[in-house]
Image 1 (tube, rainbow, N blue to C red):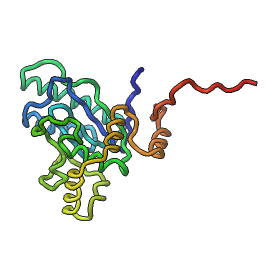
Image 2 (tube, helix red, strand yellow):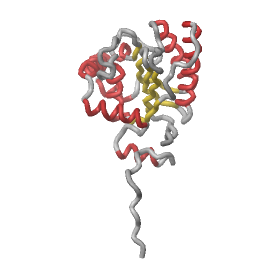
Image 3 (cartoon, rainbow, N blue to C red):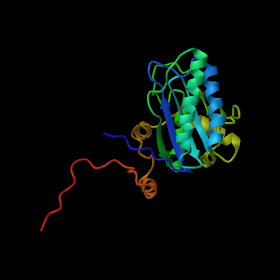
Length: 231
């Protein structure tokens, strides 16, 4: 079955992710991750994309972003992928790509899913996604939201203010949120949306998006269409 074209919409939150082709890794040390972070800083600003949260590790990079125009996410991800591989290959004396395929992207209903997704990206193991694997080598927005340090890459989404009325309250609530983790049902819905590319949100949210595109945003009903009785 042919892949549906990606759907990107300005001023809406997108969850983007790109993974490496196993057994490759995209980072051997923190220097690699810092170089990736620097590219995100320059390229996101250049392309007009606000970054709300992120998680980079040897296996993949994920982020929550809001583009200022419809093509911004695609241009950003292509630029990041190309430039980072060039620098990574030069540093580690290798050739070829790193990525297992094209990046995944899904539109997100921020009122329902921004905080759960921030929780997901705040935990190095992403809810047990890589159970048993070492997690010492990663870089994320967790330190920013926990109040450890200011991260210039981050533009907090308005939903963050729901965590508390003061910076201290928000930092404490965020830390507790990450510590508690997510329910199995939320994890399943989030991963399913990213895998399929369907928007992550309630019916009304998806319906409003559907009014803005001819690209189908929900799975087609299974089976053949019902025949209309002829006179």
